[in-house]
Length: 293
Image 1 (cartoon, rainbow, N blue to C red):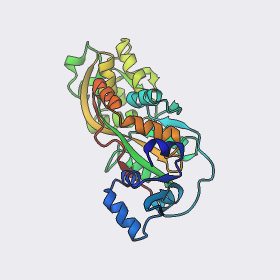
Image 2 (image 1 turned 90 degrees about the vertical axis):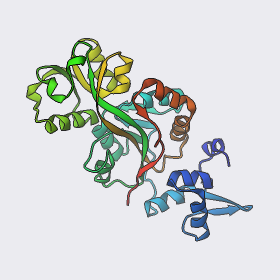
Image 3 (image 1 turned 135 degrees about the vertical axis):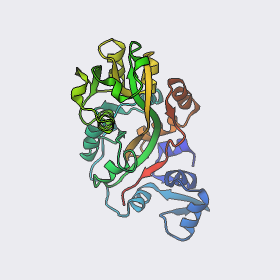
Image 4 (image 1 turned 180 degrees about the vertical axis):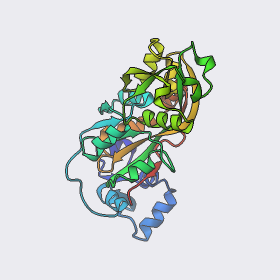
């Protein structure tokens, strides 16, 4: 069963596909099947795995999805992800409304997947997702990104840390955005208060908008990612490597829109685009970062 055939009929998975999903070697999948520890069928000597039963097995129960989710990608904005959704022809609709708002939409069943980059006590995204009590979903790695300060050329040489933002015009991200959560944490870490900054009244709702306000001369700095600083020929001060992950409903994981996107993400074209944009590490792309217990 080829990958393309699976997109046409996602009812069954191959041993290789199950191994990729579980992030184990194919030998382990064979061992699980031989011990009858994983749902499987043997047709003309070939092992295949019923998708619906496998997802229930991963989730530890057999509760079916109550309703189909719309083919919508919500949550935080990532320029590489936005490009890949469009370039792959996935057919996914996008609503970039920030990590927290996207997580709420996902929890309400209004989206098939959501993009997240929320710092936590032990790891990006894992803490906040595991605290939601969600079921029938999986957190998949998209990219590690260089996050920091996107800087106007006029001040780039003079900004070497958060303390240098005092009195500077700074772009605000919308409440609940992963960038806003990170920026607030950096202020607190360095003993700063929002009152120390000259905050721009217009909120930026995407990475593109944040960098665009700096490029237009309306601000001296914004929290942002290296890819956007490069696109607008702005300065960049790296502060952290963050994880941008995709929280995906397990019952729509194998549907054509999601699989088309994930298949395209593994192509040389997508990796070349990430290298050209800068500040991306795709080495863990597709890895399972979290599953409900």
